[in-house]
Length: 331
Image (cartoon, rainbow, N blue to C red; front, side, top):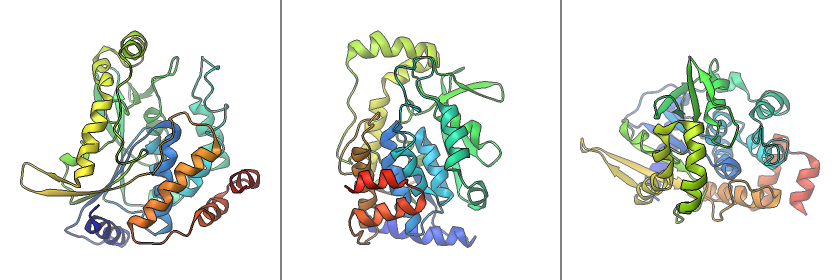
């Protein structure tokens, strides 16, 4: 990992906050991954703690879009508590509630705009541009939205409208959109087309770990049939190749640089957990271990000693983690 990328990220955050121009342009890349997205939410919490929450642009997909919103609002630690409490419960994801397996209405109504509210004024005051990837099911193409306080709810819901059975796409201005994760699991490739000097990628899996393809019988016999119904035929083939898109982006991240056709170089750094958890992991201890691993690595990347899990628990407690959850994780 190039330390110059992290130095530029930190310096540029101050410049953006103070509305100063610069020859540096930074982008933050925030993937999704259902419950394993607690990892980059923890990385965002570390960045918030370090005072780094301003970027020229933030590119996010799926659950990463919600994480990014909380991070830009300086509330990423509160976002982590949502994964440890509300998101880990059957009330949000329930495979036996087949008519509404992932209840986005509950997440937004009772959590994001309820018990753990997103600070919209602070988010609005952050000049960072939040770009959110969705999939347009009418034409099979990726659609990037620039989120703001006025359209935030619809765009975040569209970004999290997954392909699980019976879930509904989100209608925005007459078109139907779903989660863009299957098109660009790490929303890096689109960002590379723009004019940035430095990028920071917040992964939800260890840096060394590639994505593996789904078994052929499951992909073609079950997933493709459902994706054709959920996304439309134009997206089925692209959905088959999401693992290739992940590994393609990951290879660029590992290289630490990207040479553009105009001769310019984009320098890239990554923060990732040391352990892997499943997308539907429910065990709060496992979720916490993965989150703490990423938090620790984020501090280490910026040359700061993290001090163990107790400081992380203190930050989560101050953000609103319930005493019962804190006791469970501390014991």
